[in-house]
Image (cartoon, rainbow, N blue to C red; front, side, top):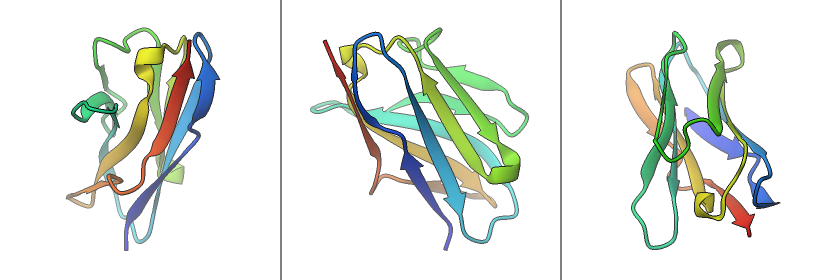
Length: 117
């Protein structure tokens, strides 16, 4: 069974940094796009950043210039480097990926990021 597991969340002060990881496990032939989402209390889940298999990236306006998405195709792992964090970045972060033609997500897990002011 293919699954995604995030790690790297935590509590950080405003202006600090965190690096999230999303590791895909199971029988995998190829991973196409990968993406990071977040959901803050009382808000809808939103796409934060995405990356294609060739490395093309896309970011939400709210995180441009502060977050960097990357991936290690050999390790089937995606990353989200978050710098200059703001209290508004506080949310549960999730990852999703297109794996062997199917969309796999981690909506049932996620990793909490809390930014204190």
